[in-house]
Length: 181
Figure 1 (cartoon, helix red, strand yellow):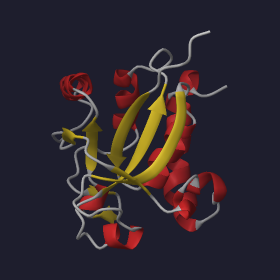
Figure 2 (tube, rainbow, N blue to C red):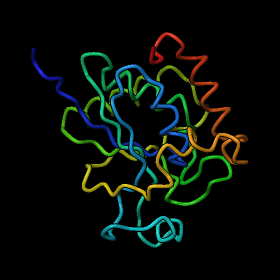
Figure 3 (spheres, rainbow, N blue to C red):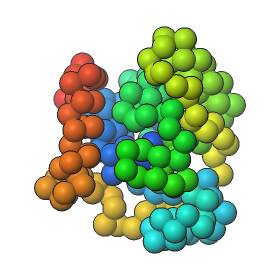
């Protein structure tokens, strides 16, 4: 029996609690870790990232089985669960740490990301242009343990109830056929 070959995607779509919660439910996803990418400081803390001095974005690093979930379909979900047209902002979360970004791990991922952006733009889903940053992956720093599986562990926390839960509900409705069994 051959072992699964997993791929990695590193995506920023605002608060990593939302991104992690959505992708945890997606068929083909093996693991999701909240963390930080795209900055210049080694091993940043949450407080440092929130201070907007490190250049990092809150990201989810997603390990997925490309035999079950293509990178293109993973990106289609990504674009459906946040607003890729707002620069450095998702709802009330404002700053570069909340930017929309795809940190590609290969030239193929870069090409697919650019193609999906063209596809979504052509479909006219958004009134404003997509401002998602498409940049080469450099490093990933896992967030502190209390950020991991945050929504699953804290569904009644006010931010989770007001912001994360509606995003997860919308995702589950829109992608009911792609949910983990």
